[in-house]
Image (cartoon, rainbow, N blue to C red):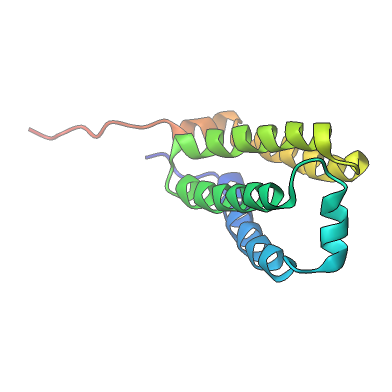
Length: 131
């Protein structure tokens, strides 16, 4: 297996830590009236919004752990799921401008996930048997 690029290590741990922290924060804020009022402005029902949030956070954590282990599917899972969430957010969010910083971070992460060194790390290598 090719040595894991530093960028993949940083991104993976960033996804794991940020996903874990946001999992805790989302759960702590579930009954916050201010959060409920903001969520009520979105046409998607609040329980569906929470379900989407939890699924995306789990995707972040699973993707981060799997990328540390060289799973190629993990980077695609993360990128595709975040694209889907971004499109849904652009269509439904009453605060579209607030999505811009997160989308910029996503573009930077996607750039590093698909650089040649990262792609070489995620390519499965067959082990040769010594006969």
